[in-house]
Every structure is written in structure tokens, then in C-alpha cells.
Length: 129
Image 1 (cartoon, one colour):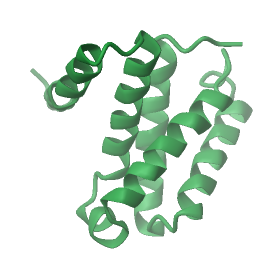
Image 2: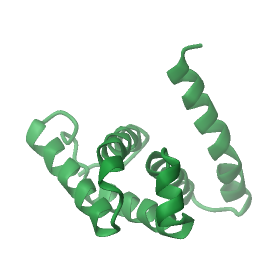
Image 3: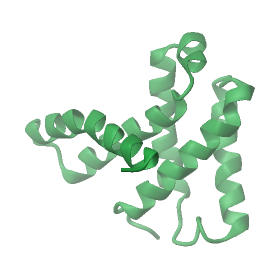
């Protein structure tokens, strides 16, 4: 198993209890998907301990929730294939992180990880318009 596969397996294992809880609470598939997406975006922006220490968990959770909304409202069928559309998505994510004073030295890695999660979010059932 490669390092990236191992990291993905760890992420899935970490998210699994939240999915089971959502299913147990009898939430719709859409709500379960949103919970998983929010957890994935949260994981993307807390890759560096400095973000947790300087911003606090509550702020990071709010950023993750806002990222889900931002991505949902921004993705189109071609967002990941057209350079101009991808650049627009990158700029929106960057602005959202800046709104919360996300550390500039962590921002580029954070943006990249958020875009990777957005790609997965798109692949996993976003109703595209």
C-alpha cells in the first residue's frame, strides 16, 4: 500500500463514525454526504498544527462548513478541466481562507488540499448544473 493510499485509508476510517452516526440518526443521503464533505474539508485545512493553535477548532469548523457551501455553489461540470474555471475556484477558496485570516504560509497547501477534496466531492455525486 502506498503512502497516499494509507493516508486515504486513515481519512476514511476517521470519517466512518460520523457517517454511521448520520445514518443512525436517519439523515438523508444528502445530509450524510454533506457531513462527509465538511469533515474532508476540515481535514484539508488542519494539516498543519499551527492552524489549529492560531485559529481554534470552532473557527476551522466554520471554515469547513463555508467551504462546503462555496464548493456546492461553484462547481460546474467543467470546473476541473478548464483552466479559467479552476482558477476561479482557486481564487474563491483563497478569498474564503483570507476572510478568516487563515495563515498565509499555510494558505497554498490549504488551497491545494481543498481543491483535491472538491474534486472528490464532485466525483461523489454533486448534482451538476
